[in-house]
Amino acid sequence: MLRITTLVENSPGEHKGLVHEHGLCFHIDTGRDRLLFDTGQSDALVRNADRLRVDLNGLRYVALSHGHYDHTGGLRPLSACASGFEVVTGTGFFVDKYGVNNGACQFLGNDFDAGWLKQNGIAHVTISEPVRELVPGVFTITDFPRIHPDEIVNPRFMLKADQGFVADTFADEVMLVADTPRGLVAVLGCAHPGVKNMLDAAAARLNKPIHAIIGGTHLVEASPDSLALTLQYFAAKNIAVIGASHCTGGAAMGKIAAAFGDKYFHNSTGTTLFVE
Image 1 (tube, rainbow, N blue to C red):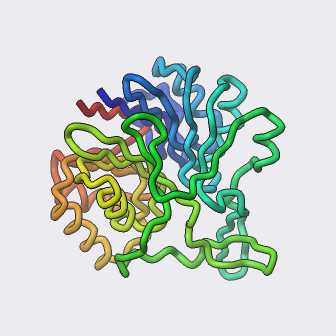
Image 2: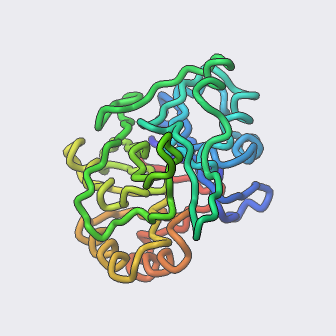
Image 3: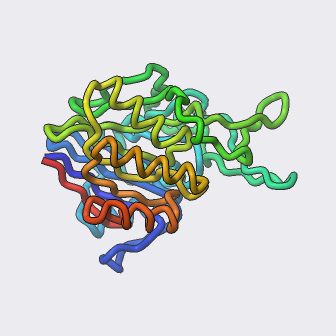
């Protein structure tokens, strides 16, 4: 049985002893292998894992969806209490990321670089191929075709390159997909390249329908028309479980809840999704 536990998310769940923060961290247990997808922004994942009796020893991989602080900041605290895992990132992950508003720049990137990983003996691999099986039944997907014109990256997201600031297209974005008898379970970080683009890529490359999605969809910035198209897409694809959270935004989550009823749940800190 596949078991996905949300160690960190923006909002508290029913377990009030857990720490919530703006960010995401998922512990994925396939019954054979265990891995993390994202690490939140602090040591919250370590504290919450202890309270949820989630063992962080023996992790095979720590896959990071993209190089924003709220998805990668927990790696340093994790490395202080667990070892032996390999860090997985997409192409361009270590390029400094910024938010730029009216000329004001704010650093949004990682608090570590490739040199820090090497100094601390942490193995690292960059995923460049469109699909790779990390462990049996769990795949990384990256390099997403941008086929839905309504899914536009906010131009405030920038990269600091040698020639100055350039638009961040989130070429480093990675998603995890678990293959189950019910269909594919898509685990999303922020879905900056567009949630529809990403789900289309996963379904096409693995030749299976999407059964469930969990994580951030970045619909917080979607226009009303784009949000309507996304809801139509979820319905047309007959997605059975929608555990939206993080950058989905309250208004979009309300629309999803109204449209899909008990197919939707708010994926808050401490939530566990079981898929047989």
